[in-house]
Length: 102
Picture (cartoon, rainbow, N blue to C red):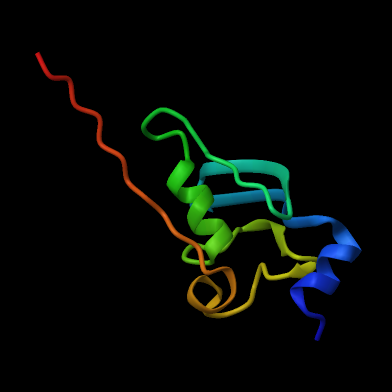
């Protein structure tokens, strides 16, 4: 198995999503999502309620694996790896609440 530094030299990207879709029955919560995050960079996912932000995060971490597409982490396909949220990605998620003060 390659180390993270070796995998970075192969792909240059820490995270790659290719055609990631997550369906719940006939409902496609996310559909054909493709993007990459270069190693050493960060991304934020913004959108309205119900836009699929949490579903996308859960598809990446494996809580609700994609029904189509693949997730690559430092050049390794982790789409179907078990327990990848805690052991592989070391990921985090913050819920943000907005309030208006008068």
